[in-house]
Amino acid sequence: MKAKLAPERSARLAEARRINPAAHDAYLKGRFMWGTFTTAVDRGHLEAVIAQFSEAIRIDPSYAPPYAALSAAYVAATQTSFRPPNDTFPQAKAAALKAAELDDGLPEAHAALSQVYLWHDWNWAAADREIQRALQLNPSSVDTLTASEVHALLVRANYQEALKTSQRIVDVDPLNPFGRVQTIWTSFLSRHYDDSIRHSKTLLELAPKTWFGHFFLAMNYAVKQMRPEVNVECDKVVELLAGVYDMQSLATCVWALGAVDDKDKARRLLAVVENPPSGLWLDPVMMAAAYTGLGDIDRSIAWYQKGLEERSPNMVYMKVAPGAWDAVRSDSRFQAILRQMNCPN
Image 1 (cartoon, rainbow, N blue to C red):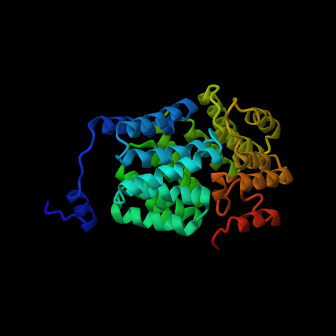
Image 2: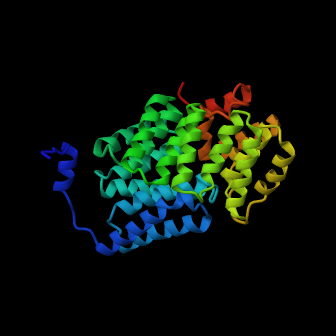
Image 3: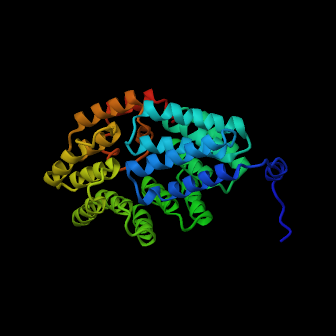
């Protein structure tokens, strides 16, 4: 093949260290469980992922990869409303910093740190710096590519770069449902709704039992004002959840149903969203989206203000996201919140 390794990769191979087989095995089990999180989102599943990475660290506290993976899992715990930001993000940051301290050449360590800077600290420059370091170390790391795509899309509003990167993620790992989610989100946030619908259907072909594909379809159909299709997809979301409380999916369906003027059905679903199982965090951003669908802009803005105070990671979507965010973006109170987040122009 006569392939040549980049200098960074050659140096990393030259510095290879011994790995504790038991720690590595525990880490790989955690990665497998983490890979199925997209299609099995429930609190117990994510807690098991966190426990698995913690076990790898217990076996070998000097092994860096489990720290980076643990950091990502803690971030996801708040993005999915399982735990509040003041619980997870200090742990996520500590784990990412430890990973970088143990192995500064590990791209996933810098990718994990970038996510803390982006989703919680709102330190946009630091997030970009860590992403660039991670890309330098391994431009084919899915974790790194995902971090790069999110920053390009939500912070710099560079839609073309984000779309290109999301496709790169699929090319690197074509059978991973998580990669398909990136193409759906990126197309939706770039306002390429038909492409997002197409990618959603591809995800459902790959993982038929995931409700994510259906709530993505509901979101896209809502902005296209396709009321019958929104109803079908939201019914499918509730059916596939089968009693599992997934706030993002349920609240998104409240907004979608409201957006197509099926407000009675939206209010009935809102009653479910407002009463999560004991111990779960009620994400203000998801509540704001739900109330936007019902046309209650004052209550929506109040929830966004609460999201600012609690540092909800999903506040990052406020700058560019369509759908629920479009309905309040011109409101001076919404713009004032964005300024407090120091979002770049």
